[in-house]
Amino acid sequence: MKITFFPLLTFLFITHAFAGKLNIADFYKNPAKYYYSTPTKKYPAKAYAKKIDRKFQKSAPFSNDNVRKLFPYDRIEQNLVRIDKFNIFKSEVKKSPWSDDYWPIYKGIAAARYAAADFNSIYNWNEAFNFVERFPYHSSESDIFLDNLSPAEKFDLLLGEDFLLTQKMWETGKKYFDRSGSVEKWMGICHGWAPASIMTPRPKHAIEVKAFDGRSIRFYPSDLKALSSLLWANAKYESFFIGGRCRTSSPERDDSGRIIQRDCRDNNAATFFLAVTHGLGVKKESFVIDATFDYEVWNQPLKAYEYSYFNPLTQVEGRSLNHALIKLADFKDDPFKNYRHPNARYLVGVQMELQYIVETSPTHLNYDSEKLDLYNSAQYSFDLELDHNFNIIGGEWYHDQHPDFLWRPKRCTQALSQFDLYLMSEPKWSGASPLNQKVRNLAQRSALKGIPLAFIVNSLIEKSNQEIE
Image 1 (cartoon, rainbow, N blue to C red):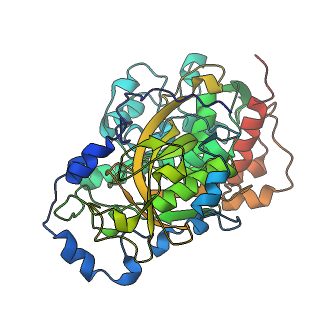
Image 2: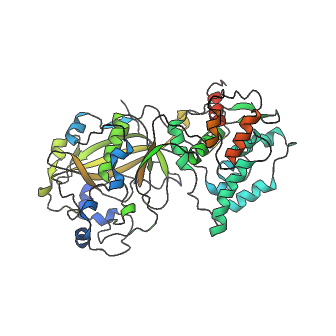
Image 3: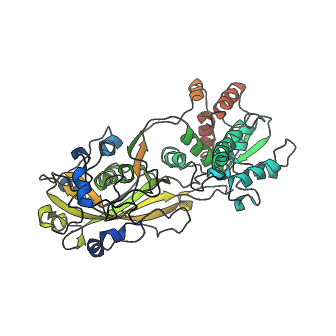
């Protein structure tokens, strides 16, 4: 299977991956050089390692970082010799997730009028809100004005003229703005876009449906992606999560630069390796990573990976496990010797290139396809600790920039509002006539909670995939 890795993208929002392949020889000469921040406090590495509770040995995964909790219904191979025989050094998912905006809060989330002139030059919440306030919707507005409304406003016009979902979008940002006078640029609904892109079919074509008053309203693929992302951001569904959320931009470190704050240690290298090789390699299914290690969260759905081994003693890289595997006792200059798992007997280095889907700006294109998606390739370097039977029991990262946590929706799950439960036997809406009063009433009640009714969103996406330009 041929995998093409795209070059590193240089967007503002893609600054969170470790760019460039690590020079292993240089790393062993000066490990602290490869951690991006200097120590915030001086914690002698040896002394700190001694005072850790045994069950929290730092080179072993924490209890909240067990790969089996990410795939609770699967049998996961953890023996590296057997994994090596699977020949899954590279793989990609069967169904690629789709790119979308992360619909930042400072622009109004799904209430952003992204197609309106001058709106995209706005970079703070107050200006974006005032822009929309200056140009409110009126029923006498032209078709061009209607076409340029936000996804949330178009959705609201399917229900009436109360604009309940739109109001909820602006209320979300107002809470942050009133509290601190601004809304941070990274905050949005990538936690909705990432699972939506995995679980929901790609909207392929623009569609026209009837608003509550019989007027035609056009939804572009970007509008439908926004509504789907919002649904998955705010509705309930079953998912699996491992790792911890780092809530500081300056985590505590020891005197070598190694992070010692538990939630900022991120996913253990062993957990990460097993999750990628099982999820993308064996199952060929995407899951989500938080691509940053600090307090910002950037949820990214995975696309593909490729890895090779390296020998920690010789720094020689290749695909031969026999040549890369060493006895831990022979590694006298191990920079992490004070943190190793007490049952570790062998060590092997891993260089991995991981490809994940990244955000794109919304447009009024009448179609969408995989050719319009964007990708980022990130380089990760780490080692794996093996016990006497070559089972993977721990590992160490060789740089800061690695995933904070991993998660995935349960297979075949659906994002539903509580009001969707009243519509389980309702036939899909064709859009040829306005929604019936029952659906509109339920959708308005759901909109008050910031959740577009799944019944409507899924009907729109299904119609989008039936339309032919």
